Length: 265
Image 1 (cartoon, rainbow, N blue to C red):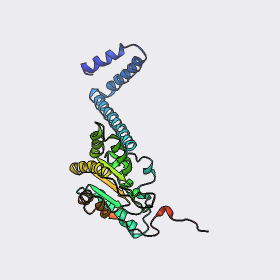
Image 2 (tube, rainbow, N blue to C red):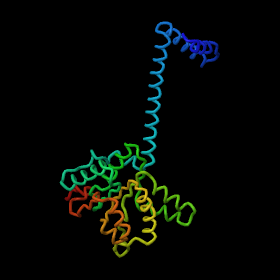
Image 3 (tube, one colour):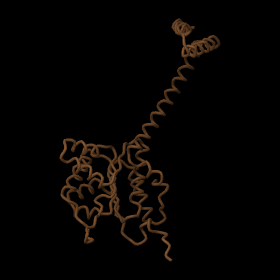
Image 4 (cartoon, rainbow, N blue to C red):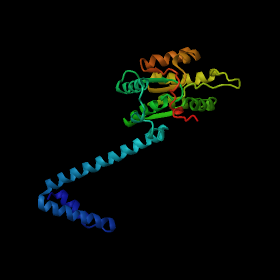
Protein backbone atom coordinates (compact mmCIF):
# COMPACT_ATOMS: atom_id res chain seq x y z
CA UNK A 1 0.00 0.00 0.00
CA UNK A 2 1.33 3.45 -0.91
CA UNK A 3 2.26 5.87 1.90
CA UNK A 4 -0.29 8.38 0.60
CA UNK A 5 -3.11 5.81 0.61
CA UNK A 6 -2.09 4.58 4.10
CA UNK A 7 -2.14 8.15 5.42
CA UNK A 8 -5.65 8.78 4.05
CA UNK A 9 -7.05 5.57 5.50
CA UNK A 10 -5.41 6.23 8.88
CA UNK A 11 -6.97 9.69 9.05
CA UNK A 12 -10.40 8.22 8.29
CA UNK A 13 -9.92 5.66 11.06
CA UNK A 14 -9.47 8.40 13.71
CA UNK A 15 -12.61 10.39 12.80
CA UNK A 16 -15.62 10.52 15.16
CA UNK A 17 -19.41 10.74 14.61
CA UNK A 18 -22.04 9.03 12.44
CA UNK A 19 -20.53 10.14 9.16
CA UNK A 20 -17.13 9.07 10.44
CA UNK A 21 -18.45 5.57 11.16
CA UNK A 22 -19.49 5.21 7.55
CA UNK A 23 -16.14 6.49 6.39
CA UNK A 24 -14.35 4.11 8.73
CA UNK A 25 -16.30 1.18 7.32
CA UNK A 26 -15.40 2.32 3.82
CA UNK A 27 -11.77 2.62 4.86
CA UNK A 28 -11.78 -0.93 6.22
CA UNK A 29 -13.27 -2.25 3.00
CA UNK A 30 -10.64 -0.36 1.05
CA UNK A 31 -7.85 -1.81 3.19
CA UNK A 32 -9.20 -5.31 2.73
CA UNK A 33 -9.49 -4.84 -1.04
CA UNK A 34 -5.95 -3.43 -1.25
CA UNK A 35 -4.57 -6.24 0.87
CA UNK A 36 -6.11 -8.77 -1.50
CA UNK A 37 -5.65 -7.13 -4.90
CA UNK A 38 -3.08 -4.35 -4.42
CA UNK A 39 -3.15 -0.55 -4.62
CA UNK A 40 -3.11 -0.38 -8.40
CA UNK A 41 -6.22 -2.55 -8.72
CA UNK A 42 -7.97 -0.49 -6.01
CA UNK A 43 -7.15 2.81 -7.69
CA UNK A 44 -8.40 1.46 -11.02
CA UNK A 45 -11.65 0.35 -9.39
CA UNK A 46 -12.00 3.72 -7.67
CA UNK A 47 -11.46 5.52 -11.00
CA UNK A 48 -14.16 3.38 -12.66
CA UNK A 49 -16.57 4.09 -9.81
CA UNK A 50 -15.84 7.82 -9.99
CA UNK A 51 -16.44 7.78 -13.75
CA UNK A 52 -19.82 6.08 -13.30
CA UNK A 53 -20.78 8.58 -10.62
CA UNK A 54 -19.86 11.51 -12.85
CA UNK A 55 -21.75 10.03 -15.80
CA UNK A 56 -24.83 9.58 -13.60
CA UNK A 57 -24.50 13.15 -12.35
CA UNK A 58 -24.21 14.45 -15.92
CA UNK A 59 -27.23 12.37 -16.99
CA UNK A 60 -29.35 13.82 -14.17
CA UNK A 61 -28.21 17.34 -15.01
CA UNK A 62 -29.09 16.80 -18.68
CA UNK A 63 -32.52 15.47 -17.72
CA UNK A 64 -33.15 18.47 -15.48
CA UNK A 65 -32.00 20.88 -18.20
CA UNK A 66 -34.31 19.14 -20.68
CA UNK A 67 -37.22 19.38 -18.23
CA UNK A 68 -36.59 23.09 -17.71
CA UNK A 69 -36.34 23.73 -21.47
CA UNK A 70 -39.68 22.01 -21.98
CA UNK A 71 -41.26 23.85 -19.05
CA UNK A 72 -40.06 27.24 -20.30
CA UNK A 73 -41.01 26.54 -23.91
CA UNK A 74 -44.75 26.82 -23.28
CA UNK A 75 -45.28 23.54 -25.14
CA UNK A 76 -45.21 20.97 -22.34
CA UNK A 77 -48.91 20.10 -22.53
CA UNK A 78 -49.19 20.35 -26.32
CA UNK A 79 -46.29 17.98 -26.96
CA UNK A 80 -48.14 15.18 -25.23
CA UNK A 81 -50.43 14.96 -28.25
CA UNK A 82 -48.86 17.07 -31.03
CA UNK A 83 -45.97 15.01 -32.36
CA UNK A 84 -45.04 13.66 -35.78
CA UNK A 85 -46.17 10.16 -34.80
CA UNK A 86 -49.63 11.45 -33.83
CA UNK A 87 -50.21 13.50 -37.01
CA UNK A 88 -52.95 11.89 -39.06
CA UNK A 89 -51.43 11.97 -42.57
CA UNK A 90 -53.97 9.95 -44.52
CA UNK A 91 -54.34 12.27 -47.53
CA UNK A 92 -51.68 13.43 -49.98
CA UNK A 93 -51.75 17.07 -48.85
CA UNK A 94 -51.22 15.98 -45.23
CA UNK A 95 -48.32 13.72 -46.24
CA UNK A 96 -46.73 16.66 -48.09
CA UNK A 97 -47.06 18.84 -44.97
CA UNK A 98 -45.43 16.17 -42.83
CA UNK A 99 -42.62 15.51 -45.32
CA UNK A 100 -41.86 19.23 -45.64
CA UNK A 101 -41.55 19.64 -41.87
CA UNK A 102 -39.27 16.63 -41.57
CA UNK A 103 -37.20 17.93 -44.47
CA UNK A 104 -36.87 21.28 -42.71
CA UNK A 105 -35.39 19.55 -39.65
CA UNK A 106 -32.99 17.50 -41.76
CA UNK A 107 -31.21 20.51 -43.26
CA UNK A 108 -29.20 23.45 -41.89
CA UNK A 109 -29.41 26.12 -44.60
CA UNK A 110 -32.92 27.48 -44.01
CA UNK A 111 -33.75 28.50 -40.44
CA UNK A 112 -37.34 29.68 -40.98
CA UNK A 113 -40.53 27.69 -41.60
CA UNK A 114 -43.91 29.22 -42.53
CA UNK A 115 -47.16 27.22 -42.66
CA UNK A 116 -50.47 28.83 -43.58
CA UNK A 117 -53.94 27.42 -44.04
CA UNK A 118 -57.47 27.28 -42.73
CA UNK A 119 -58.24 26.47 -39.10
CA UNK A 120 -57.94 22.79 -38.24
CA UNK A 121 -55.68 21.73 -41.13
CA UNK A 122 -52.80 20.74 -38.83
CA UNK A 123 -50.59 23.84 -38.82
CA UNK A 124 -50.18 24.12 -35.06
CA UNK A 125 -49.81 20.35 -34.69
CA UNK A 126 -46.85 20.26 -37.06
CA UNK A 127 -45.34 23.52 -35.80
CA UNK A 128 -45.41 22.06 -32.29
CA UNK A 129 -43.96 18.74 -33.49
CA UNK A 130 -41.04 20.56 -35.17
CA UNK A 131 -40.36 22.41 -31.91
CA UNK A 132 -40.53 19.14 -29.99
CA UNK A 133 -37.78 17.70 -32.18
CA UNK A 134 -35.63 20.79 -31.66
CA UNK A 135 -36.22 20.67 -27.89
CA UNK A 136 -35.10 17.05 -27.84
CA UNK A 137 -31.81 18.20 -29.38
CA UNK A 138 -31.29 20.68 -26.56
CA UNK A 139 -32.40 23.84 -28.41
CA UNK A 140 -34.01 26.42 -26.07
CA UNK A 141 -37.46 27.09 -27.52
CA UNK A 142 -40.29 29.55 -26.88
CA UNK A 143 -43.89 29.23 -28.05
CA UNK A 144 -46.48 31.96 -27.97
CA UNK A 145 -49.31 33.24 -30.09
CA UNK A 146 -48.58 36.34 -32.13
CA UNK A 147 -51.30 38.17 -30.19
CA UNK A 148 -49.57 37.39 -26.89
CA UNK A 149 -46.30 38.74 -28.25
CA UNK A 150 -47.95 41.93 -29.48
CA UNK A 151 -49.74 42.47 -26.18
CA UNK A 152 -46.50 42.12 -24.24
CA UNK A 153 -44.65 44.51 -26.52
CA UNK A 154 -47.44 47.09 -26.44
CA UNK A 155 -47.58 46.86 -22.64
CA UNK A 156 -43.87 47.72 -22.40
CA UNK A 157 -43.52 50.13 -25.32
CA UNK A 158 -43.24 53.19 -23.06
CA UNK A 159 -40.92 51.49 -20.57
CA UNK A 160 -37.15 51.26 -20.51
CA UNK A 161 -37.37 47.48 -20.74
CA UNK A 162 -39.11 47.49 -24.15
CA UNK A 163 -35.96 46.39 -25.95
CA UNK A 164 -35.32 43.80 -23.24
CA UNK A 165 -38.61 42.21 -24.31
CA UNK A 166 -37.62 42.51 -27.98
CA UNK A 167 -34.28 40.83 -27.22
CA UNK A 168 -35.96 38.10 -25.18
CA UNK A 169 -37.87 36.90 -28.23
CA UNK A 170 -35.46 38.17 -30.84
CA UNK A 171 -32.53 36.15 -29.51
CA UNK A 172 -34.04 32.92 -28.15
CA UNK A 173 -32.62 29.95 -30.08
CA UNK A 174 -36.01 28.81 -31.42
CA UNK A 175 -39.16 30.95 -31.56
CA UNK A 176 -42.56 29.58 -32.58
CA UNK A 177 -45.22 32.20 -33.34
CA UNK A 178 -48.71 30.74 -33.76
CA UNK A 179 -51.77 32.48 -35.24
CA UNK A 180 -49.58 35.06 -36.97
CA UNK A 181 -51.69 38.18 -37.68
CA UNK A 182 -54.81 36.15 -36.97
CA UNK A 183 -57.76 37.63 -38.90
CA UNK A 184 -60.16 39.52 -36.61
CA UNK A 185 -63.62 40.71 -37.66
CA UNK A 186 -65.24 43.96 -36.55
CA UNK A 187 -68.91 44.46 -35.65
CA UNK A 188 -69.82 44.58 -39.32
CA UNK A 189 -68.19 41.23 -40.01
CA UNK A 190 -65.28 42.77 -41.88
CA UNK A 191 -61.71 41.54 -41.34
CA UNK A 192 -59.77 44.40 -39.78
CA UNK A 193 -56.31 45.41 -40.91
CA UNK A 194 -53.47 45.17 -38.35
CA UNK A 195 -52.46 48.52 -36.94
CA UNK A 196 -49.19 50.26 -37.75
CA UNK A 197 -48.08 49.67 -34.16
CA UNK A 198 -48.71 45.92 -34.42
CA UNK A 199 -46.70 45.76 -37.64
CA UNK A 200 -43.86 47.81 -36.11
CA UNK A 201 -43.61 45.62 -32.98
CA UNK A 202 -43.66 42.45 -35.08
CA UNK A 203 -40.94 43.81 -37.35
CA UNK A 204 -38.72 44.65 -34.35
CA UNK A 205 -38.65 41.04 -33.16
CA UNK A 206 -38.51 39.31 -36.54
CA UNK A 207 -35.84 41.63 -37.90
CA UNK A 208 -33.63 40.82 -34.91
CA UNK A 209 -34.19 37.13 -35.56
CA UNK A 210 -33.40 37.64 -39.23
CA UNK A 211 -30.10 39.34 -38.42
CA UNK A 212 -29.17 36.67 -35.87
CA UNK A 213 -30.42 33.84 -38.11
CA UNK A 214 -32.45 32.32 -35.28
CA UNK A 215 -34.71 29.33 -35.99
CA UNK A 216 -38.22 30.73 -36.45
CA UNK A 217 -41.46 28.77 -36.91
CA UNK A 218 -44.58 30.70 -37.96
CA UNK A 219 -48.09 29.34 -38.49
CA UNK A 220 -50.97 31.48 -39.73
CA UNK A 221 -54.37 31.52 -41.37
CA UNK A 222 -52.90 34.16 -43.69
CA UNK A 223 -50.72 33.21 -46.64
CA UNK A 224 -47.45 35.05 -47.22
CA UNK A 225 -49.14 36.87 -50.09
CA UNK A 226 -51.65 38.20 -47.56
CA UNK A 227 -48.82 39.13 -45.17
CA UNK A 228 -47.18 41.08 -48.01
CA UNK A 229 -50.48 42.91 -48.49
CA UNK A 230 -50.28 43.92 -44.82
CA UNK A 231 -46.61 44.91 -45.06
CA UNK A 232 -44.57 43.99 -48.10
CA UNK A 233 -41.19 44.47 -46.41
CA UNK A 234 -42.15 42.10 -43.59
CA UNK A 235 -43.75 39.46 -45.84
CA UNK A 236 -40.92 39.45 -48.36
CA UNK A 237 -38.28 39.11 -45.62
CA UNK A 238 -40.10 36.12 -44.16
CA UNK A 239 -40.25 34.51 -47.62
CA UNK A 240 -36.57 35.22 -48.20
CA UNK A 241 -35.60 33.55 -44.92
CA UNK A 242 -37.89 30.55 -45.41
CA UNK A 243 -36.81 29.82 -48.97
CA UNK A 244 -38.62 26.67 -50.05
CA UNK A 245 -39.87 25.96 -46.53
CA UNK A 246 -43.17 27.76 -46.97
CA UNK A 247 -46.50 25.99 -47.23
CA UNK A 248 -49.91 27.40 -48.02
CA UNK A 249 -52.56 24.75 -47.49
CA UNK A 250 -55.45 25.39 -49.88
CA UNK A 251 -58.76 26.09 -48.21
CA UNK A 252 -61.17 23.25 -48.98
CA UNK A 253 -64.22 21.71 -47.28
CA UNK A 254 -63.27 18.78 -45.08
CA UNK A 255 -59.75 19.98 -44.30
CA UNK A 256 -60.70 21.23 -40.83
CA UNK A 257 -60.15 18.04 -38.85
CA UNK A 258 -61.76 19.59 -35.78
CA UNK A 259 -65.09 19.65 -37.61
CA UNK A 260 -64.97 16.10 -38.87
CA UNK A 261 -67.18 13.31 -37.60
CA UNK A 262 -70.06 15.62 -36.71
CA UNK A 263 -73.17 13.53 -36.61
CA UNK A 264 -75.97 15.08 -38.64
CA UNK A 265 -79.37 13.90 -37.47
